Each structure stands twice: as structure tokens, then as C-alpha cells.
Image (cartoon, rainbow over all chains, first blue to last red; front, side, top):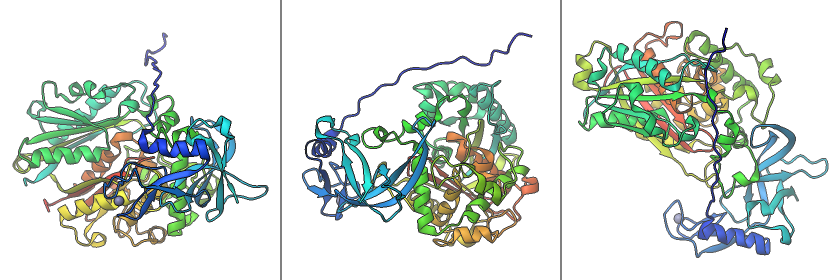
Length: 149
Length: 384
Ligand SMILES: [Zn+2]
């Protein structure tokens, strides 16, 4: 019996550039050039965003010029032990976590490095591990991970 | 505002794969069921709404691919990239405003044709701040679960009970793709791709199609089928950013339900709702959503679940259909399958899983990771 004809296959490469914007550039430049975290703050809402934003999502004020230095240390709010990569394929387990950087009101998602024999847990203090200055490209991945203090 | 009713429903059985049917043929079959249920001639239909997302369909400008399978060539038609409940609200407004009398809403899932689901989920992550980290979208759901567990004190037993209840309910639903008896031992033995989420508490995708026919009051009353009335609806997005969203509470659900309940005149949700179909893409989401829309107090949904309050015979049945865990995760059609169940229940036609004295039902859909978007719909046997 001839095989059933049920489908054809298709694929197409999708490539985009994503503009950092004035606010994104501010944050990425500070990471790349100084290993510092610069966010922006809304005085009306008393709320600090990291990464920086041009406008406050709560009151819609322009806050681009209102720089605020945050972190570099922070507190872990939640942790997940992950066994898959971004395509869903099995990998060596690694930790990711939500970090509340000191002086920021937002949460940052990043990789968490456990110290020897220490499992990262909510409430733990963490600090950033930066790539060496010559290797930084102006990306969130210029921070390699956060490690337990 | 004119009153609006649902007069016809049609859905295909959800299943993990549907290799012999194209999405158009699936939609056509669901539409035939719905039009037959409503007792209408497709020629009478006036306007159409589809819910679909280009990247799930595998074609750009998917709205170009829609009218014919609903019998809507040459008629007003548009596509929305959101959950089915938003399309239902759209259709209800088209009628309430007086523009049309008969409007159709459609959504489908052909998830089995998506070869790289994880990549597509990752493509939804913020391209500047999140996607470069190489972290899968599933990990964001896991972190949300971790935050909710910390907030609510929910136990493993309660999460297992949600899975067991929903997959168990699915056993008496002929439309469900994943009926199963699940024990606490099964739950504890389940693997985990991203802790603390176990794979058994994560809904699996399924294929299907669902079509709903709406009519204005006069048309609905003149029709043979028993109308189920749209009493209220609302939708909301908390924010698009994962850095500023609330991780432990479903703020979008609270905002959407607030609008829907006000429109429906619901003052006390605990007393005035007979049953709910609530997004349970992950088991914890059912509990988090129930607290977000005032069905249970904060930190108590898990206790009430263990007491059996949300079982079909409980005080306030939740996901009698089997929910996403039992039915399957149906992409944009999630909310329409919820509506299909509520209409069946409010008509008293749910058979073995019939909720006694069902007068008013609430559906709550969530758009999934990484969103903080949701929609709520209130349906009743009476217009209000
Ligand atoms: Zn503000």
C-alpha cells in the first residue's frame, strides 16, 4: 500500500536586530565600561527600574534623565534548578534566579552560581560576576552570573 | 447595551496529534457542529473573529488564511493575537453595539505541527534582557511557581490534588486529550525540567478547534436552542516586562475579573458563582487564579482544594472539564474550550460531570509564559 501523504515540511530563518534604545544603552554602557548597574528612578512613584527605562510604566512620566545606581549586590527572591536548554534539550543542571538588586524595585533574571557545597536559596545574598572588560560586548551576558556572597 | 447570548457551540475532540486533518478542515468541522447546534444557516452569519498567532501557525499574516473555513467569504472578519476569551468579548461588543446580530468566534490549535515549541516559547522572551541568557521559557513558569509556593504555603499534596482532580474529571469528558488517574506517588515520582515544577503538573499541548456562535437578544430568543447569556467580560495585562511584573500573584486575573464581575453584577464571588473553568496550564496557576479572583482568601485555595471544595460535587467546582491539564493546552483556543464546557454545564448537558444546579459560570484564561495577560468571562442561564 502506498504511504499516506499527510504533510509537507517548511522552515524559514528568522533574524532580527533589537534596538537597545536610549535607556537600554545607558544600562549596557555602564555594565560594559564600568561594571556598574545604572537604572532610572521615578520620583512620583518612588520606584526604581533596572534595566533603565525612558518612562515610568506606572505614571507615564519621563524618567530617562533620572539615573540611579543600584546593586551591585542583591537578594535572591526565587531559584529554579534547570535541566534543559532554551530549545528544551537536556543539559547539565544549572541554577537561575530572580534577584532583587539593592536599591532597585524591579527583579532581574539571571544565572546563579552555587558556591562549593552551597545550594542557592531564596533570601541568599548574591553579587555579580562580570566578564573581563576586554570581552564585554554591551549585553546582559556581560554579567556571567550572580554568585553567592 | 443590548444583551448577548451564546446560541451555538462546536468543538473537536482534543488530541495529541491530528495528522489526517489540516487546521482548516478542523475549523470547518467545528463550525459545522456549532452552526448545527445553533440551528442556523451559515448564510445568516454576519461577522467573524479568529484568534491566532502567526508563529504558532507557521505562516506570517495568518489573518489572510481565515475566512473560508467559517463560511465567511466576503464578510467582515478579523484576527486577534490573544486568547479565545478576548475574541468572545470582541464578538459580544459587536452585537451589544448594535452593529451585528450574529457573530462567530473561532480558535484552534495545531500544536503538533510545531516542531520546535521550546524555541518558539523562547522567541517570546525579551530579546534584549532575557533571551540572550539562554534560559528556557519554562524556567520562568518555574520561578513563578516558586514565588507562589512561598507566598501561599501550598503543599505538594495540594498540587497533586489539582492534577488528580483535573485529569480525573477529564475521564468523563469525551473532548479531553489527557484523562488519567493520578496518585500522590505518581506526582512525587514525576521528573522536573525546571524545579520546583514537576512535569506532571504541566499541561501538554493538544490539537483541536472550537467555534462559538453569538446572537443578540431578540435573535437568541427566537432561536430554538437554549441561550446562555454573556453577563460580563474583562481583560487585562499587568505589564510586558518580567522585571516589573508581580511574580507571586496573578494581578492580571484580578484586574480582568474585577471588570467582568462588575458588569455581571456579582458582589460576592464566593456565593454567586456555580462553577469555574480556570487556567491551569500549571497546577499552581489554578490555585493562584482562584485567590486572584476572590473565590478563596489568600493562602487558602490549596486547603480548600484538599477539602474537596473544587471537586465536581464540591461547593464550587473548578475545571469540571479537566482544565488544561486534562483537556490539553490548546494555544489560542484555551478560553473557547472553557466556554464550551460552561455552556454545556449551564444547559445541563454535561452528563456524568454535570454540576448540580449550575446557574452561573466563570471562565478565566491566561496567555501563558512569559505574559502577565488574562481574560475573564461570566456566563449565566439568565441575562443577568
Ligand atoms: Zn512613576
